[in-house]
Length: 116
Image 1 (cartoon, rainbow, N blue to C red):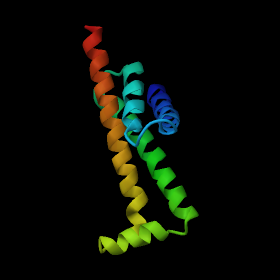
Image 2 (tube, helix red, strand yellow):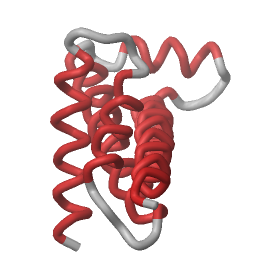
Image 3 (cartoon, helix red, strand yellow):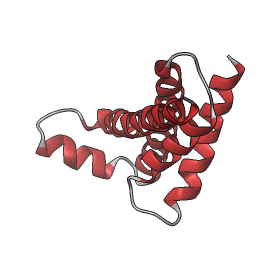
Image 4 (spheres, one colour):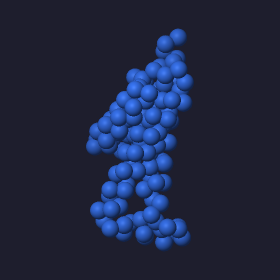
């Protein structure tokens, strides 16, 4: 449980720092690095920890930006896709979580391959 929490925090911190200098897919690099350094019996644990870190980071930042501009962008996108734009931060968080999770899965797989 402790490793999962540490990997979650590491993914959030690395993801935020990487986004200052790299494009949007930097969260996958953060998940990869976190997955490489934390060892689990099952790779799904590393995937889940980084998925949650990426979801919290991207979803939180999307929510914050959406709140700061009075939900203008999300309402316009909601009109474009004929849906409620309030779901935009959740969808953004899901994409960030999947990127981080698959990055961690790749890093964990490389770690298992190198440990043999």
